Length: 436
Image 1: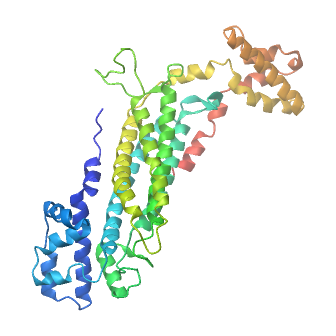
Image 2 (image 1 turned 180 degrees about the vertical axis):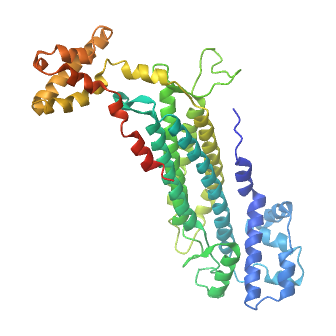
């Protein structure tokens, strides 16, 4: 299945062409700032604003320089006259590179935030769709108590909304530029140059840097994406569980002509959610190398550079793809409420045990007596289920037959098996989550 998603836009952001285009954008802003400070004349400034470069020429020069930023500078300066003396004037490589990286990271995060808004829309729509649909809640994979299937979607919604807030926070933190010189001491650069350059680019100046912008900022971005991936995998794993043959409460949409197995024609596998699970593992895998890139020697080294050349393009493209795939999967997920109800009832009413446990003390039984009565009768039903006797005996019947409960009004026990009790606060929970 091929998803229609924004990877083309993300791929462009992390392309070599856009990298050098952004370098040039930063360099031109620095020239404008120098001009505003009276260092560069208007004519030189204007000519530099109009200059361009050839990507192929950068690659040619790099064969000699073995330094892509210097190759970029030389390729640009070949298209300038005397004014080239003011191109890349007074700054160091990282002033250009790290400030350009901030611009690209901002745009990339904005795409991810847009993806998340789409996902939130899907989650809210389906939460409302299944607000009154009962499903068995599970802990340890074992039946617990009835609940609304809508609550499952509402919980996913709230979790993703927290990720939006987290990413908005790192977007703010990564949106800083630097023009501070070789050691960050601004020995050859006035503070006003950095301030004016960042204002032109729509960034805030970092309050202090050494030769690079500190990599804790970048590690926070990657870790925010890694935690987001964990939540997405959580959803995918649940979908995979719902689609298991023994459960079959929901399944991925299976289109006409789609194939599940080359050997077993009947197979309809949760391939999209399995794919999402794998992608999320890849995304999380980048957290550690980025954390290790925070520690650089003294004012800088370039051990982080090789890491980032892999991590940034891959993690943003993968996250973008994964989020679109997840949205499409959930939007088209086929749900079977009748199977949810059948699964809920397959244990003969055992899922109502806590309500009985809470009712017996109100009828005069001690806490210890109540637990013993409920657990012992539940054990009988479990045994009947193992022996395929659930059609003859159920939890309510077992309780009604228990001599210890002969003085209890049967209506009191039957009332404990009311499904509505477990859905009574769903509307209130929804109001708390979906606050307009």
